[in-house]
Amino acid sequence: MIRTTPDGAGEGRTSGGDSGSKRTAFDVVVIGGGPGGYATALYGAAAGLDVAVLELDKVGGTCLHRGCVPAKEFLETATVRRAVAGASTFGIGPAAGDPSPEVRFEVSQQRKQQVVDQLFRGLSGLMKGRGITIVPGTGTLLPGRRVRVTAADGSTSELEGANVVLAAGSLPRTIPGFEVDGTVVLTSDEVLDLEHVPASVAVIGGGAIGCEFASMFSDLGASVTVLEALPTILAGCDEDAAAVVARSFRKRGIDVHTGVQVTGHTPVPGGGGTVVSFGEGGQVTVEAVVVSVGRRPRSDGLVEPGTGVVVDERGFVVADAYMRTGEPGVWAVGDVVAGTPQLAHVGFAEAIVAIRSMLGEPVTPVDYGAVPWAIYCHPEVAYAGMTEAAARAAGIDVVVKKDPFGGNSRARIIGETDGLVKVIAERRPDGSAGRILGVHMAGPWVTEQLGAGYLAVNWEATPDEVARFVQPHPSLSETFGETVLALTGRGLHVG
Ligand code: NAI
Image (cartoon, rainbow, N blue to C red; front, side, top):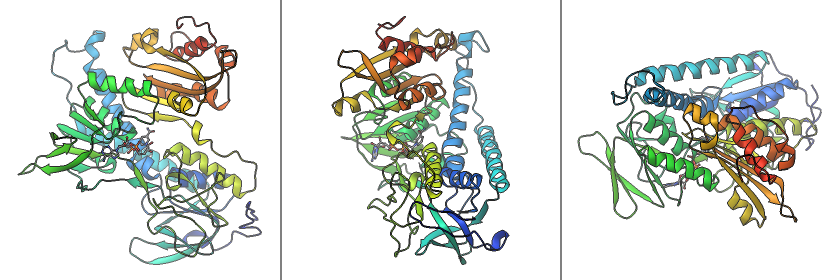
């Protein structure tokens, strides 16, 4: 099979080698089988390329085994408990004031694992069906697009790729003074293996992961404290959306401290928890600490000296808009790439860009400023495009409209009225709203509602264009429709 790359790397190369595990030469060797890596493999195989994926654990990576999927499954458990606890307001179940519903966490764990295992089997089958070779082991890029494979028993072998894709992903960051022990100090990796719900939890870092776990533990009955260094939780989100979550957390008794540095912790003598110190003399005694202060690239030992691949001072692999590294024929996708959002779906998008670039096909680079974000705490947050603050900081004159879910009939029906939709548009010289720059949502099922907003931002649509489209009634999506209509200057409900 003849493959060319924009660099000319791999040109004229044939995918040869023996069949089965003895094969050593491929069109594409992918190091890492997470979302970035498996999407590269699936898309590449769909394009007829002969692909090998090196994976040191299980294909599916952090997202499937230690991140998005199991975390969202537990968040669904939390949602079910919240629904059961609130059932009496619908006239269902025990009278208000009865003991809150029991959580049998071992059942939740089993269910979570079933979901993960089913998806893992599905993914493995799909990869096998496409003829992708999965090689167990840890990969290291050597000069000449060779890859050393170190197996679990320490033995090594080598593969060669006409192209090599670095997709090694990321690991939870930790902070000094908080050694992860899996029982008291946890990262997202360990939280997902807990056997019971701790009675009290301190969450360090109020970003996406921190807010999801804070929300989940609170809904499962734990008392939760969030300790965030910045002045707000969810600092990357639009401030109105972040404020919805902050308000909801407060109402549910989650103790949020912002603008505080965490200085250390002292285990309670005899076990059973630890005292976390923060800010100016603040202390909280908890059974468990969840450290969610970001993720670092998994690039230790990924690239041997002698290639043109640049790894920056923080360990991220530098790639251009076409996912090319500094070494011809070597590409990078996913969380390991410098300066890009660490999101599974960004990995999927980059995989497509990498394969199409490799094949010399027309390709549109990922627009990182307009990718969808979805945070699954309660209430959920979802957005695409610029925040109001970012637009103003960039010197853009904007028109902004917000519509709270409180006025939405479906939100009233389901009893989930916290939240809003906010749309930010460029102000035209005549003062009217032009191109939609950002759509921000907080509230019920907004991670499923973002689609229309995502399209509006990425299609560079104007409110007049989008407001023509009809939303079903009664539906949560009417709030987006109404916000956009209001931007035309004539909202039905929003002025
Ligand atoms: P993050 O970077 O989103 O948030 C970490 C937070 O910790 C920041 O607000 C930071 O100010 C704070 N922080 C850092 N050091 C601290 C300290 N010593 N004391 C107190 N606060 C401190 O990282 P997070 O939440 O760990 O997520 C990692 C990556 O995974 C992110 O890129 C995130 O976007 C992605 N992710 C996305 C999800 C989603 O979209 N649903 C879910 C989970 C993760």
